[in-house]
Image 1 (cartoon, rainbow, N blue to C red):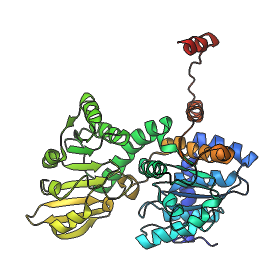
Image 2 (image 1 turned 45 degrees about the vertical axis):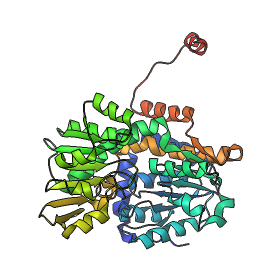
Image 3 (image 1 turned 90 degrees about the horizontal axis):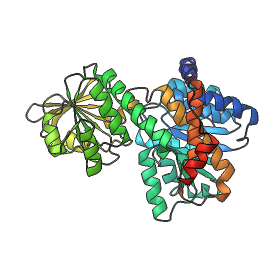
Image 4 (image 1 turned 30 degrees about the vertical axis):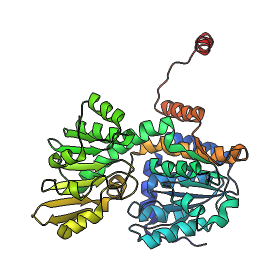
Length: 413
């Protein structure tokens, strides 16, 4: 089966991007060296659906070097980098993706990837799992299991499992302590502001930033906004998280109240329509709306369009909506993941941890699937600890180890 990409001639630029990130992914480099020798995935078909940029490409190459036949497709219409896709094809990975896909193209690419008849899947958001439990159910007997990268995907998986409908085991890599602590907090925290600042070329200092959702991603975005000099407001539906935000030094209020004050709004809830027409109606002219949640549903784009008298692209990834009263509201990156649709995603060193865990999750499925029920499994703590130790070693940092006496004491305590 032939790959479907934009332009194979872009491959040299893609090689440069991939080679750059490899320099800063020491944990994945260690795994690549090990797996290239042992080739534990020989003969296995793996489908990876993720944001197709350089760091994802390196994960795909590590899996290929471990012996797998790898097919990759994008998990977001605006996050695929065409030069990276071309470089992967030249290195023997099947790719079905290009930048700015239509909804029809996006689904077609998912089907093309599934046509390779995967044994193991690496999903991002749950679209692969959804297709396998629906239109592509004929492939279910082939599936040994898979892993999920995002909060949104894990929520969908747990819902499917709760109904007794999940047909193969899935590992919630997203819920690994080592993953959400670093990827969601530090990765999303930095990359969201990278995307916003690159796109708008505006200062953050002195602005009122409204962060919707104070989960791990929201914590990271709020922390970085504070560091950039913003006045940060948190909106929440969880009383405990709201108190945590207050104790962390942020103001907490309803979106109705925050809408009147905000200069920049960032949604990270995993829910839909967190910002609606009634909130848009209260916003000041010049308000900027950005989403860092997986799906483009957190900002109600239908309401935004219906309430405006005109709209136009004023700068790449910035759409201006003029309201009936003359106010201007700006939407970044079509309300899609601003850190990837308008940036390069999480910092390389962060994804080194996350993608090392993805590679190890694939190996765990391969080795243990026969003893795994059709459930959502947490990422094994001992493997998460192994990844963290590899990262510390690569950074030249040593830590203490418990003595035999201390281990005995803790077991008895």
